[in-house]
Length: 546
Image 1 (cartoon, helix red, strand yellow):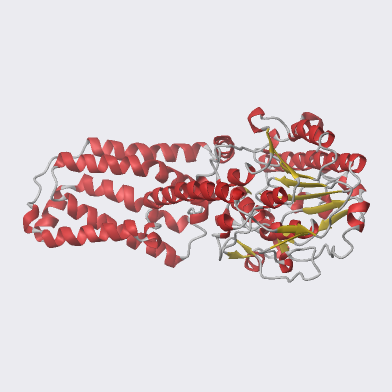
Image 2 (spheres, helix red, strand yellow):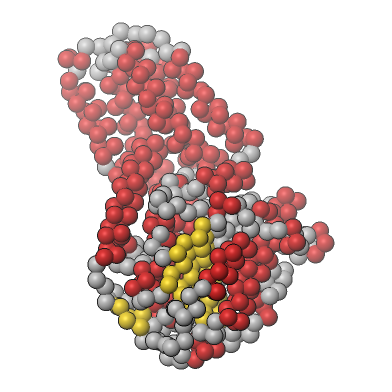
């Protein structure tokens, strides 16, 4: 062991390189607001063990081979390290596992807008410096005489076992940022491939389904999914600005405004996986084993339509794409990069076609997705904090932050127009119709701190408290006299598929009326935002701070 230490003393730059790659992020974790001290300690211990094991093994290889090893490590570590470091610098969080998974399902356009909003000169400089320093170190490493491996077999075996254990044990591997990212990426790709294969295969398998609301008048069922809309910025829910002047004109007998609804996550893809399938935390296999919402309507004989202004690929780049491709008719407007009113190009066409058939229409809007100023036409540039004085003063709300809130509220106003137009069109053209609107997740707008957006590691009530609106034609509602429309039921959109099944009258194996917000059998249960209890989130953010 003494000989090993002697060689390590001569390899100061090599040791510093390993320290830089493996231990720099762990020693910066005190900045992470989402990690406990035990989490931070585990991170340091695992990375320190890996540091020691690699250091020992590299004592027995030639300088040239060592440079190759370190160059390969740098290639694999630099991008994950930059991502983790950037999050740590601007959000003061270490990415958790579900956020790492979300990285692989984020489309390039979203990533570009995300970077444009959050990146500042210091984060950019820090990230570039982080990437440049190890390259210089590799170039300046000095030669040395390696030890003979045959005399130190025990040390080598122990070091190799440590490395293998860290790489192979999933819980331990998460402590090493770049190992975690690549393990997660491989797991994600394998999972999506398998899901795509099994879901397509089950389309030819029999599945018994019936409806208790068979009708001679064709039904039109519309689900509109918003984006990043928190109920805290909707006048329907008491917000001081009139962001819902059109929807506020409806009475409770026509538009039900549900007050206690949350999302099961704060990122789009996991929310949609939960809402449109029967998968749940304890039974993720249900995503593959049981039909999704669009499949249920297909089986029931509906014409199914998917209209999206969000990124979508029929090649199934994400697990959400897998569900959307099951619609019989698909309209993808995302490549056009237009405001949400572009969806009416398809919506108008659908309303005119197949008038003798039952229709299920799923619409996914770009809504209030960051950057907010790009989500509405200039005619909706309405709110100005300097004129109305309605933005609450807080120490971290300066001019820039207030302007961002103005932009966000303008996008909410525009969303009000979009949803209202859909309802009015249904009123005029479809006597047996309903429309249900909810947002995938919410958004924080400098409510408690100098932060806007949605990040699971900093989850707060505005990020998960979402609007949930139900409109029904009088004929449609009269047919549902056995259902309960209680706007104060505590609910998570993770159970959305059961509610839609219930209001559509579907009955099938696996249907659970206790999880339908409209059912007389509804049973409230503890709600979670991924692994975090919603009640705990509320408790951390005291109501007097809101």
